[in-house]
View 1 (cartoon, rainbow, N blue to C red):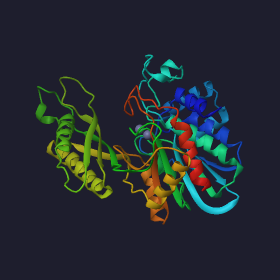
View 2 (cartoon, protein in one colour):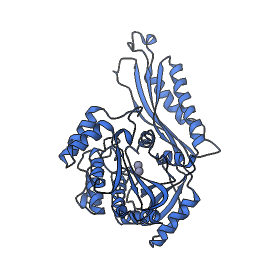
View 3 (cartoon, rainbow, N blue to C red):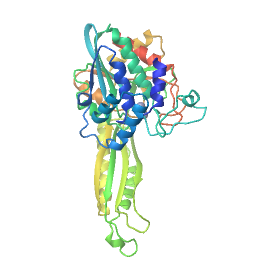
View 4 (cartoon, rainbow, N blue to C red):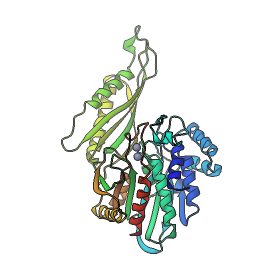
Length: 412
Ligand SMILES: [Zn+2]
Ligand SMILES: [Zn+2]
C-alpha cells in the first residue's frame, strides 16, 4: 500500500484513545517486515494509572471491528490486553545520534461529514465507524511514519531512529503512559510532526511557538438526596455545587505573565425533577502557554471545585485525567529541519504559532532535561475546516512532504 492508500485505509477505520487496535495491528504487520527491534505491551507503555482507560466493553467492540476489518486476530488480542503503543528501533549502519520520531494514532468521537463537499466522502474513504473520525490528521501521521520506516530500511544513515507510534494523544494520556515504559530513554533528538494546524498547504514549519500546557480534570460531587418540597433542608445539593464551580472556574482571573484558558466542557447530574440532586460530575481543563502558570491555574481550578463543594456541604473528588506541558523548540534542531526541508525544495517557516496542546511536549521535556534536543514540526495541510470538525481534512500532497523532510533530517 502506498502512502496515500495507507492514509485512506487508516482514515476509514478511526479508533479513539487507547482503542487503536486495528491501527496498531497494521503498524505491527508493516514493521515486522523491516529490520527493526519492536517493542509493544509493557515494553512500550504502562497501563497502570491511566485515567479513564477504556472499559472491557469498548475494547471488545473495537477489537471486533478491527478483526472484521482485516487485522490479525492474535495481534488485536495482545494489543487489547496490553495497550496499543508500538515502538520500533531501526539502527543505521554508521554511528550517530538516537532519534525519536512521534506518530500519534488516535481518532476522535466526531461524526464525519457525509456530503460530497467533504473530500473523504466524495472519494469513498469516509469513516466506516459511525461517530468516530480522524479529524486531526493522525491518519496521515501513521501513514508518514510507516512509509518513512520503509524508506529507511536500507539503514543508510548515522545513528538509530526510534519510531514511537503513540495512542491517545487527544486528551493527553498516551505520551505519559509510554514514558512510564522508558520510551525516550537514551534519545538525543526528538521530533513530533503534525499535519495541518492552519499552516499554508505544503509549507514546512521547523517548530512551533505558543503550544499550551494543559491539565484535564474530572470532578465528582456527592451530596445527599432529599424531597425537594418536604425536606429540602435535609438535602445536600451536588448539582448546585457543580454549577457554582462552573461559574467560579470561568471567573478565575487572567494572568499578566502568560496567556491562559479555562473551559468546563461537560456537566452531568442524574436525578429527578423533585429530588435534591445528590450527584454531579463535570469535566474541565486549564491551559497556559507557560507550564508553570498552568500548574498555578490548575491549583486555582481545584480550589474553586473544593470551595464550591464546601459551600454546599457536599464532597468532591477531583481526578486529573490527562495533561501536557509547554514546549520550547531547540534552535539546533530548527536549523536542521530547515536545511532538510529546503534541500527538498519545500516552502519553509522557522516557527508556527500553535493554538492547541499536544502531549508530545512531555516526550520533549524528558529528552531536553536529559540534555537532548526537541522540536515539533508542522506540515501545512490546507485544512478546509478546523481540527476536530466534521469537515476536517488534509491535502494529501502534504504526506510525501512529511516523509521527505524526516528522511532528509535523519540521513543528514
Ligand atoms: Zn487533535
Ligand atoms: Zn492532533
